[in-house]
Image (cartoon, rainbow, N blue to C red; front, side, top):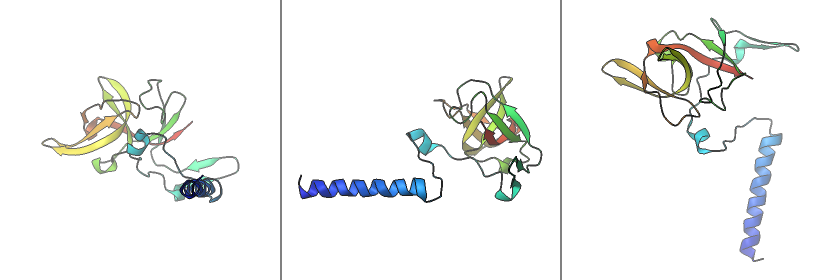
Length: 158
């Protein structure tokens, strides 16, 4: 082995050791993306603050005004984030400013309730619009309006 090859090997070894230390011993959880989609998907808004969570040995209490529980059909459009068997915690948004890119919303489309992520927000002659798309879908749903949005998903439990 040449000196250059040894140095390259050592740099890779040290980098790997540092990364493993951060993951397993630093005490902070980090999310590592495995594909381009995970790098491009915006995260939902932070709806539940730490002060709204109470942890007991036998239960967790979340204080969320007006929350309801939802379940999901096995369409595959929101995999791996949401799928059949998951339980969603959702609220009714009060104003257009409550909705942000990255949020997961429920809205009516062709008389069916659809659950997709907000991927864009814009303004046109009719006011604010949102563009939604399933995390596992290759095309968007087009423009939807605030009045079309029935719920915002603020948590998912599996």
